[in-house]
Image 1 (cartoon, rainbow, N blue to C red):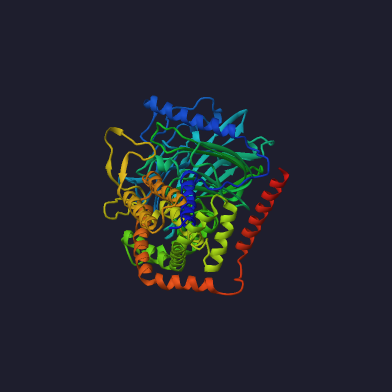
Image 2: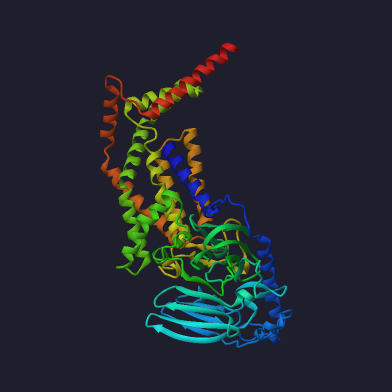
Length: 617
């Protein structure tokens, strides 16, 4: 392994480590000044927390669903009848979802995904009445009415067709003044509809009120084995009507005012999301995330969204909710760009995943049920694609190794004059027909696939709870031993991942094999130190990552061993040496590459500056 190859490895390692530390998706910047203040959103979060605390303390007024049954103070007399009501949730169900409508607020109070389980094999519940609050507010007689505090009544539940069913909840002041919420669920669909109808409220809501604020607050329920990892992959995404989706920070609490036309807002966890979409865009909003490290909830996710109120006798709003997995093929079908909440990487890294890895992975999944075998086949497939680059890198390394004795002679002859040494080295490379970047560039060209794999495996819901060998869940870390009594090693963790150990050991062996092929000069010694430190760094970073990722890198190393053995047998170094010597004997100028020309010009300028400095003295 020559210096350039090691530098290539080091750059790849540096990028991988950077991705591991800073894997937050890029956030779009908005030039329009914000309209809705985030301070109100933060106050709403605190109020919601206070409400939850009150419910815990005063259990005498809390029903089995977590709803407070006592009257709400300071409610105008017209709305007092709606501060009490039925506490039984009403169920809608299809092949994928169980949805329960909470009469309090006329809102979705319970969401269960039927095809998924939590890490401990319990029903996967995205929302329950204690963890979520949803509603909108409007002024009435100098007071604020919040629909989330009021009880709706069941108007009707019906099957509209074999493909859909609906529930209609109503809050009726009189025959001409009422609010109706209509929920629709469709066959084999994670998207449900919610229509809000405000009839006759043009005489109730003040004429100067031109908008209504909708508030959605969610304490995200834990679904995965690693609470830390799930927190680090949970945040809020949002999409303006004509922009790409953006998000808040993943690893720290954040808040942001939104201005402009907002198409959707998504409460996103590691493998699942709840997204609200509006047929007519929201006109402004605010979002915020907060984390309580002592809580078993992942994060508190909050949004306030405003939609226009036009003072019509019949005012209607058409909302939709996606309540399901972060599955690329599923999300892309809705044509709302929701698939971009899956962190597949930006630029070329994302393209590799979208157009190469995901299609191959999906194709193999149709025929093979064991995902460990699928990853093995995928690794072989990628290695075959990269074979020309790998061969070119190995061939360049072999040439540089054959030139090493002459390079050592040049160093001894030139001494410490680095500019002259570089010039003489370039002359030697040119005569021998060897490119000093021949080993580095092929490695760099493989980088997009390495980075793509780094993003794909931890984000792939297909691997969730898929077992292979000792790994019970390829999407999470494989622990063969947990340290007792809560002991944890800094930078490493509280467990031992066997796939990570295998990857690290195979990387060290691979590094040693290549180092043994090179000389022992001072520069090579420095490169050897760097190349040995990198696998140890990976051991810490990858110990809590997806087992599938470490397994893939381990397989890639094993296959590389095989490739190098084949290359070593196939390449006759005597013939290669003879070719290098023949190149040296060629007469006439060898055509220089653009890179060589730039390097020589740079060296010439350095020498001229050095001479000018000497004359000045």
